[in-house]
Image 1 (cartoon, rainbow, N blue to C red):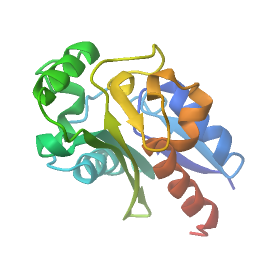
Image 2 (cartoon, rainbow, N blue to C red):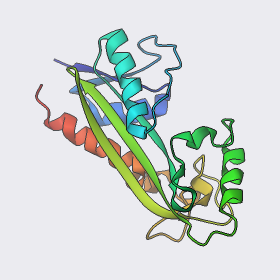
Image 3 (cartoon, rainbow, N blue to C red):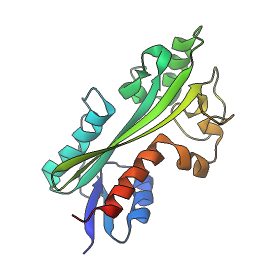
Length: 194
């Protein structure tokens, strides 16, 4: 029997990607598929709390197993800002405005260590399972590259001499924080017999 699993996102590309990996054991649905039109509040203090708020909302209101993720950039010299506020660091959801504010806040700082982090919350049969993916890197002094989004043009992952925004999507998807967390989730689901 095919199991239904909701990915708490409206991004059909992300949904399709996971659906292809988990087929035929799972039918992966997104928020539109279950007619969830609510902007689920992310009021937690950590990535794990925000991801869990989203998966719990779907599980409690739609009675379907669900997973949700929350991601962001943590910069050591800025006390791990922007963290959970990565998408609205400047007060608005605008990638370039947020990126420019981050660069301004880093002016004069020699420590440019940073990490991208994703936490996935899977609520399955009433139990919450968390999966984390982290990629370490540094923040460049100016943006380079046109691929990707958010802080990708200034994030250079350790072991590379290019930013996320200069990488082909296929390469980024092998090493990114989201890919690492997603792989842990997929491994768990493939080995889960419940």
